[in-house]
Image (tube, rainbow, N blue to C red; front, side):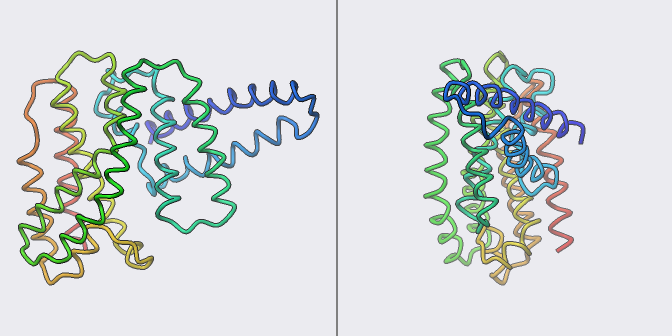
Length: 281
């Protein structure tokens, strides 16, 4: 909880920078109204929409997980950059997948624009800027691939083949952590390859866990995930989850690097939590 509070406090401090620039724009236009407090209230409302979803667990903040893996090796000078990208992805995810009332949709658009402005104001290393471009292309790949994988799972009746396809899809979805890991690696000289692979594996398991938690919500709202597709089949769900976890275990990259080891420990913790969740259904 302290980790979430620290990250949210850092995120909210960016609002002051936006307010200063808006005051300058209003001054240049010789506008007296709306005043600073109107914008402050507007930004507070829109930012709270996102940060509250982190607090409740409805949305996952990838930056928090990446910091947990890197610990003191995380480059805090790029924390707000990482958070801005996190927020933009959270917003795009909801805009694509959820029915949103107009008030929330407006808050999301404002928050997206505020974060997009903040991101573009930062003087970032070329590696990060290039990485962000690649990252958004990965998200396009993910968006187009997800339905293909789900259909492959739907028409298959072999449990192990379904498990392998599920892992492929979850690892594809796990690409959404990649840019956050690249930001964290910018000044780190350790085993980057093992860190990247284990971080993506952790994220894939993290997604699986949330999909299991969200089964009642997704079924009620007719939203498909890999687990809702499998729940419609006549398989033992625990056998399915055990098979997936076994495949994930085989994919874990052994390394003596401290950060890679941190992610390995996080992977083990996810396995335990997923097993318990599956048994509770």
